Length: 328
Ligand code: PEP
Ligand code: MG
Image (tube, rainbow, N blue to C red):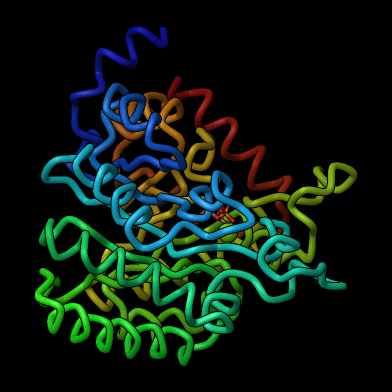
């Protein structure tokens, strides 16, 4: 069956009534580029740049080393979009190595963009490497910032990018006239204010792993709470809906790159809410593509409305299981 699904890798992710979405790959390491192509990915929706650091810790890779990796990544997807996320360090990701200490409450601490802005030197190095690659592959590179909760964080990154662009120009290096800057929406505050973020950014990408953790106040890695950590909780769905609607009104793409994008039962509801890009680890792409191709957008919209009106995660999950069982 997997073989059959892989044979459909070249077919468009299109519903039976002609609604087209884009299927992208989450890529953490360069050797996954092949898998992404085999599964028919149309580009990269999430490259977790902090993985680079795992090979060089406790030192951060310098500008040249980063430039080489980003370049290889973009070259691996000719003519396709490649979304590179700036470091999401801190929290539980290499916090001791970067901060030199552990915080009392790391999930609510100096992580993601907060850490990058608190250590502007290492952030500048990363932004320079990203601008150089974006300058060489115009229109292909998107950059996104993790863990934003305040509009000022995005504005500060924009000011830094503009300054660095001038700096690089003075050095005679190619820079993009405009860099597509987006944000991960994974803090409930950003989801609630999505229309404001959407006005100032080129795209949004919903990070349901953290959005679920912060909305339900459940540690995403705590096994004892696995049954309480439910991305299909209607409270999370309502936030997702808000972000997608804000993106549509602002005329920008909205992607979802958390694990939820790869969950077969979530496909009809995410599709029906109007999500434009699904990004996931490559092995999950074939099943998601086949589900999208098996349903109509009209039905998906009805399913999404129904799910949004429900009162509990259990109710939503049971409803969606039934629908997806009928599609498989
Ligand atoms: C997310 O939070 O959903 C996400 C994609 O980012 P990460 O899993 O790297 O925190
Ligand atoms: Mg996250």
